[in-house]
Image 1: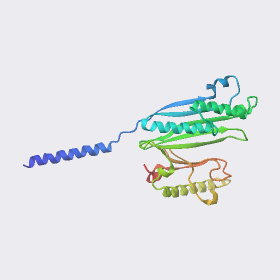
Image 2 (image 1 turned 90 degrees about the vertical axis):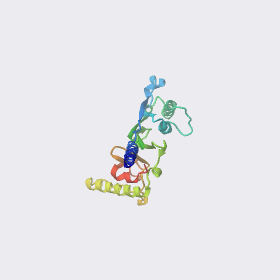
Image 3 (image 1 turned 45 degrees about the vertical axis):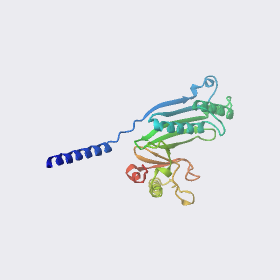
Image 4 (image 1 turned 120 degrees about the vertical axis):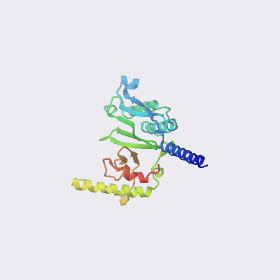
Length: 255
């Protein structure tokens, strides 16, 4: 009478073990991309007249399909905003690039040297990807007249599970706690730079109220916090950035 009971227990234990093993073996998300490039030389008008330098390089997500539409639309919206002026409607990135060339030629006629020096370089690539999140980094340089150009970077972060773009508000489960951590690291970096470079003028926020940057993005190193030029203060002519390591930032993340 004990024998069936014994085997029943063994069977139940084995079944439970299989369930635990299945739950612990999460299949990795498969990511697939294509790279698209748009250059000045792609446009016929630039074969026989001066044109500004244009180089747009961006990724197009193929898989996972549940995320691809949101990612690709986010990239297109970002690039179109940079290539066109307010109120200009376009149906594709190629058309947006054509509009950019036309706008530049209108601002700087082809007989002006400025029509050659006017330029826009924009490269979109994956800075980090996992089963939970994809971070896209856009590095850009633009010259539109004046004493110097403007360069920087922008991040877009996407939740793999929901397929939605993430902001600081839904990226952190404890935004106040993370802000306190970022503030401590910011002033630690400022103190270090001031002590090693006597001529370094420490950055301070308006009214001395710390603010997170508009650009937050993940890399293999951790979370990069990137302040564009003049984002912290009016005299900050160069971008400023620092990292918070994965072990330090993970407890605050909402994924």
